[in-house]
Each structure stands twice: as structure tokens, then as C-alpha cells.
Image (tube, rainbow, N blue to C red; front, side, top):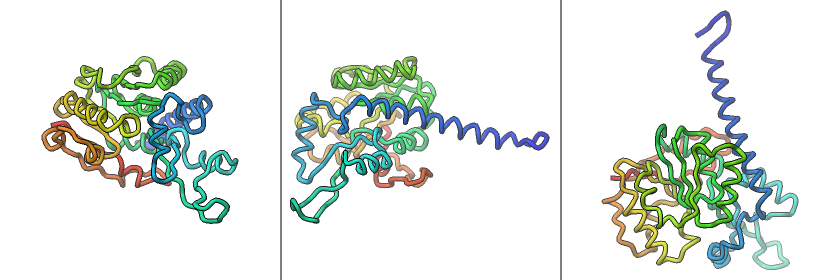
Length: 281
């Protein structure tokens, strides 16, 4: 529509782009606030088991939280000598290899892909993030979706406190609630959820027996027909090394995702392909 040389549709498009950009800025501000309150590895000493598992990995691995540290921030830290992307395979030699990075959070790119391309309209829906950690899924859900309620369930008191600080500072309290608990004590919350998000949630924090118990609890309580389950990695990969009674074919149906719809520059296709969506049968 053109009114006296003014294109209304172009104005609306520009306004929408501005709004999205502002939401991105808010998330980046939250990430900066959190970086200033955390050690560079973004892990607390209270995470004994996760730290131990990372140290036991056959190849050198470091935790680099993808929400806090995008590639530009990592590059800056490497230049300052505070972080490295490689390690020496023979001390004193020039033989180096790439360090393996692991993250327990989604990056900004992954969060936008999740809410803008993976999930449907969430108006009036309840989202539960299992192991909400820094709250990235909750904050992005507040900004990028119309979900009526976003619940984060987190066992670690230190991370719960950080999330609460951000919720208060950025005035998210009307739609976000953090529950300090083991997810296995929250059956009613899972039963009412329309979307459940699980990103690397058990492997580094529980032993295999505990993982199996947790997955069986999830499978027993995430049962609302048509509700959605988002996992990283796939359910098949998460359950492959565990002895459980979970029958995937009777519980979920995987929804195929289009990983080419994300038009962000410097898209990490490999990271997006780790995101899997399932519909509850």
C-alpha cells in the first residue's frame, strides 16, 4: 500500500526488522551480564560430576557456553590469551590439534532457529525447559514467542539464582518462572507442558543409571497428545547407551526439520542439525 509516496508495507517490514534486532540486543545484553558474573568456563564448582566427565573425555575438551560466547567473543578471548582453540599434542612442539568445545546452552542463532522455524505459534502454550541452567531458552522464549508461561527446572541453586537475577532485571517475571528442583519431582509440570526442551540435559550431570531413571520418568509424564519435545542430541542417541524401558515408536514421532530456512549469516549447519523435534503420540 502506497500513501503519498509512503510505502506502508515497507515501513511494517522495517519496523518488524527493528523489533527483532532489539530482541537480539536484549539477549546479547543478558549474555554480557551473565559473563560478568561467571568464570570464563561458565561452570560452578558445585557441578562436580559435569566437571569430572569433561576431564575424563578421551580428547581434550573445554566447556564454552554458546549463549555467552559466540565466535566473535571467542576470537577476542583467544587474542587476549584467555582462551585457546587448540592444544599441543607433544609439549614443546608445533604439533597442535583442535580442542573440542562442548556447550550446555543454545547459541543465539540456535535459539532464533528454535522459536522462529522449529516451533509453531506458541500463543497460550506452556514451555518447560529441563535443566534451564542460564535461562537462555526461557529468555529467548519470552522475546521470540507468545508462550503464556515459560518454566525452567534447574537442580543447581547457583544457576537458579543467576536466572532469577536476570528475570528481575529485565522484567520477565510475568511469564517466566524458575523451579529449583530435580525434574523427577515435577510430574504435574511435565504433564501440562505443550513444549518440553532438553538440551544436553542428563549425560554430563548424571551417571547412566540415573540417566535411565530420568528418561523413563520423562517418557511416563510427557504424554499430552500432540505436545512437542525438543532434544539435543536426538532421543535415539541419548538412549542408545542406556538400558531403559522407553519405547520410542510408541511414545513419539520425529518431525523432519528444514535446516536451510535459517538465513542468518555464518550459520553453523552442524549445530542446527543436532536439534530434533518430536510430536507426542
